[in-house]
Length: 267
Image 1 (spheres, one colour):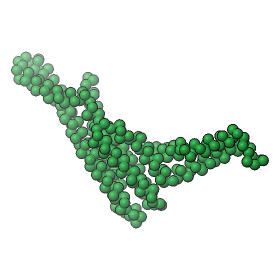
Image 2 (tube, rainbow, N blue to C red):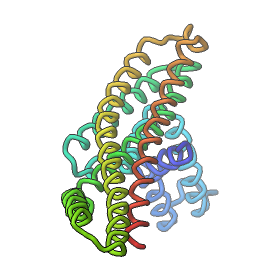
Image 3 (cartoon, rainbow, N blue to C red):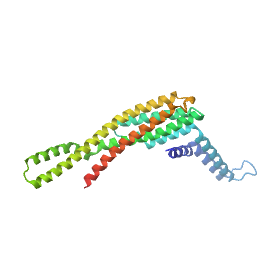
Image 4 (cartoon, helix red, strand yellow):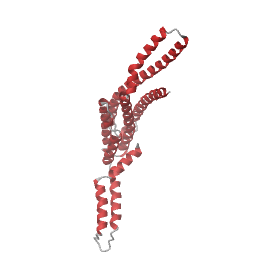
């Protein structure tokens, strides 16, 4: 995430209007052969343009506010709320990105150790945002999966039908096949219910996560320089880590059930 953030900062600076003007102006002056002094060589403009571009990029990537804007743009593009179809989940992701932006701006308004501390927390929150996005995508996939929707409706009915047939069947061979079919359906139904429960849990977690992000933002406003090495700051980092791990656990649980469903369907 740090690497992607630096790439976003550098890319935003390089592809800015100011950068384009520096490059274009040096090329035009070189092409015209303009010489402000007798000793001036036209290729000096290319050297001058390269140096000016290097200075501009250096100033841009060390400007905390410019860097924060670049990171915000990267996060919004990578975790685009527009790609989430569920309106409630999409709004939660938007609010999470807004909290991340505010925390980043808070870092840009400080200097020294305080700024580094808030920036480190913001980087950890990037992982948090990623898990929120991934969980939102899993919820979308569940809601839009026609096969899972069909199975949720049909499997309980099929199971009841098989059990009625088993009660009426006299043939031992047919009964054995019915019992095996019932066991398969029971496993499928248990997995479907487990998946439903995980999706319900995910919805609750997203709501809780958003509240936790708001709490983190509030706490960041209250921590000052004397608190940087305190247990309070350490607890804040641990809380963020715990939230990320909790979201990862839910995502893993959803994936595990869905992978089993695909495996069972392919057999």
